[in-house]
Length: 475
Image (tube, rainbow, N blue to C red; front, top):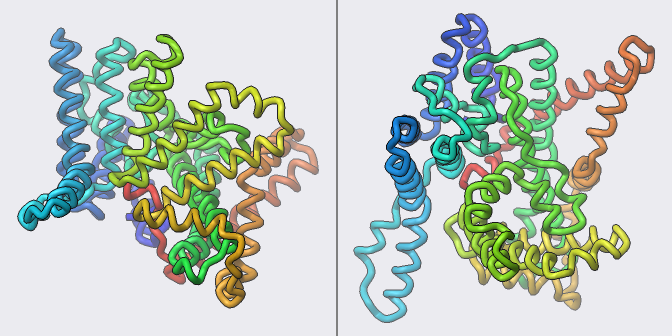
């Protein structure tokens, strides 16, 4: 069930609010748990058993840790979660590569192919990381094990952030699970945040997807450097507004139920280095890898060479986390290599350069990296990158006019504007005004009607059935 689908917006969500606000406080978590399981079952059917099993396992492992069986509980949790990820997400990748190796040396691999037909459950990368962080934090003594299974299972299955994050740690909402205050101001800010995310997805991301999909699927002979760069720009905007839009909707929904989820994006395209980019992009994943992998490996405490090795490992696994495909691994290592180069001294050079040059460097590196992320194979990515720098190829004006419509041009302008903090600045300006001043009332009224207008535009796109699933659902 998509956040952008009519069944969610006009049936599931209103029904959820009615039930949630009617039941007594002590039953609210139970209602959220049942509704979240229903939300997941709608799309995944029997695979809902996996997330229930994950909740039961990590709940039990944390109790084992709290009762003195510390290493047993931790090891069981780590083995279970990594096994779950390995089987459902990576076994197909391993078997497919094994089949290719066997076929290359003329060994019949027909029987082996049956092992690769494994369905990837939605959100498995997110909820396994969440529950794994819970048991690790219990083991480290940062939090206490939760004795209430309903509360813990609610945390694991909470539908706003279940499918594609942000990755919420138990410690971040521990107190809210037990007691949360819902106010009209929090609910209203949740509605605003949700509508902003909905507009990001329906208006910007989906239109950019039309342009990106069209250009990336063009045969190399019909493309040109101009078309290829236009495709990179479109996909860069698509993936940002798609993923940050989902995060905004998740955070907004959380506020409506009394939860404050962590931020996941902070205008990453205004960065001036790859290091800064990763402090702004998919923040909850970056922090997860830092706290549960990079620092335990030694971080930067054991000399430069060990630091670079640790960074290499982290970004290799970051790429692999995004998908079981060589293009994702290369994408992760591509970023890792540039971070290592920046740590070797290039960051200091960037800091001495004019801001626009450092910014251009960031956009160039990230843009080329998205080619790997978007492509299905390494060969496809390689051919596309060759086209980026093939300045001799002529642009097919017929294709350009077909894809670059007036609507798409307008969307690209909006994407450029809203990838900067313009909305945050304007919001802060309104908040800085005197609450009862004429200017505050005018600005607040304009903002309200703008949000209503955005919803109406989104409704038109939803009504025309412009289906385009969230990119991060497949991770």
